[in-house]
Image (cartoon, rainbow, N blue to C red; front, side):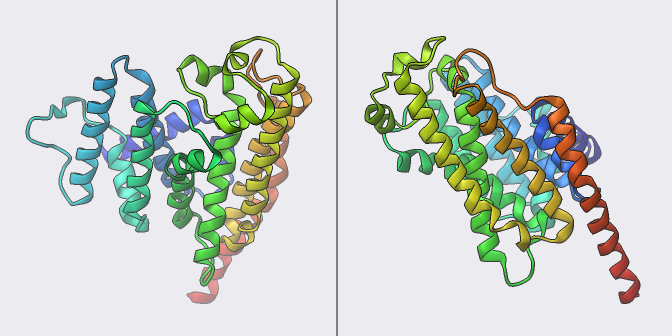
Length: 308
């Protein structure tokens, strides 16, 4: 897999599996998009390893192989390893490694992400929200902080921008958990904290029914409010980014936040059908932010005139 091919594969993975997210990336300057796609492609590839194999041992071995190849490539190797068959080497890695190197992305964030992917192989329930947050630190918050260097925090704001990026990752992940309650249960996983189920009088069996119980409706409303709390904290960081990155993040927040609105509009029924933001609504959000994105891009390009 050439570097060009790897970046193109990551772009296609993003376009196919993360349509709302991909739409928002089109608001970024063209040079930033491949790097965002590379980060998405790596995360998606690891997630597919976790969810695609039928045997836990196979999934664990494949994840270990990905980790070994990634470690060697980050250290300057080509990704091969004694005893590994490189014929089917992970094709997203060239783009991902190039992006990590180009932006100095923290390797600790990568390790945190892979730890959470491994947790999905053995952990299917979380007793408390703090326990769930521990998982989401790797599965979601780390993705947000890996993205941050590409989005360019303004000088002197890095620490505050990192916390906002972390909160945005948590907000997106919790939104996905609420939308995918039924789908996750089919995989044998429950991402709603067990203490919350107990507090609202919800049994796990209630998550597998077509109709909502009043108790489950109240629980989901509570979790929607919790997700919105993460969005509010994340919103504080948008103005800390380079102006050309802000429309993308604002649009992404609207698109994912729109899922919460659709959940509420459906009476919190996430068991019958998969809640989604309609296509015309997505395009309206994109169009509303397109003018600001174009203006910011032009303004940053004009700055080079004064430099030259």
